[in-house]
Amino acid sequence: MAADLHCHTKLSDGSVGIEDLIVIAQKSGIDTIAITDHDCLAGTVRGQVIGKRYGVNVIPGVEISAFDFDAGKKVHILCYLADSPNRLEGICKRTSVARKRAGQIMMLKVASRFPVTSDFIIAHASGSTNLYKQHIMHALMDAGYTDSIFGSLYKALFDPSSEINVLAPTKYPSVEEVIEEIHGAGGIAVLAHPAKFNNFDEIGNYVKMGLDGVEVWHPSADEETVEKLLTICAKKGLLSTGGSDFHGIYGEKTVTLGACSTPQANLDKLLGYKAKKKRAQRKAEKEAALAAASNE
Image (cartoon, rainbow, N blue to C red; front, side, top):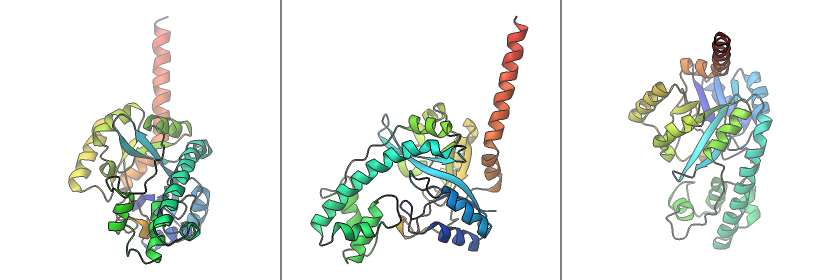
């Protein structure tokens, strides 16, 4: 059965609420989803409760923003099935505060260029834990300055190469710190959409840091990329996951829920991953103890 392990809601930069997302999943025949809002765990418990009501299994997740300072690239790490998700609140809150500060700066710059108020822009972020570029663009759509979220105006305002951009810097934690925090919370760390940020060459480094898997099936990955990533995962013993990166109307492209998904066999491996690791660890400890005893 289909499992979409990368979905966003209004709590971050999605346009759909938690219950509506789950209803769409149920009506689309999708048994399992993961709500992976950006640096936000607020929907985890509610999502699981509502999911049970509709017969949809909701896997707890979060997409944590990071930066590879050596490669100079953005990196997103998906966390699944954390035993103690509250231990991720600290790193998520730091990024949320930094993003909020940057969002306010961008909002004020936009409000100074267009006849819209800050309150008007903020109203479009109602229900979200932060202010995202999509909210600003939605406000400009309603004010009649563009007919799309991602178009020429978005590029002018938010493309780093644009001379009139309103971008404000946001500080993100390192990839190593994010992976350590995820493991500290008892979670599984999966590299999100490597094709989107061109993170292919760095996967080996992230494996050394403890990366558990890679998001193979994603709208940004064509068939050739999928095969490339499957080969990497097989060689390095990594989990392979998939998801649509659903954002509703706030997505860069028109993407339906379940457009990319995780095959059942791969979902089973994800769900059994921590138990398998624990068995391997116990076996290694037992073998080490036997070896030490034989040397005495």
